Image (cartoon, rainbow, N blue to C red; front, side, top):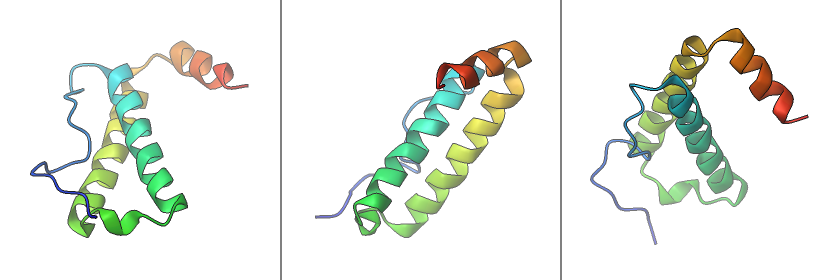
Length: 81
C-alpha cells in the first residue's frame, strides 16, 4: 500500500506566522520521515513528495530557529537533558 495525497508536502500546517510552530512542524516532519526510514517504508512516499517535504522541513526548522530568541532556544535545548 502506498501513500496517496494531492498535497505538495507531508505537513498540512501553515506555520509561516509563528517561529515556534514552524520549528515544531519541521522537527515533526523529519521525525515522521525518520520513522518511515527506520521501518524500511520510505517507498510508501513518492520520491518527489519526499524530497519536497524534506526541504520544507529544513526550511521550517531554519525559520523557527532564526525567529526564536536565544533564551528560548537555550530553554528548548536544555529541556531534553
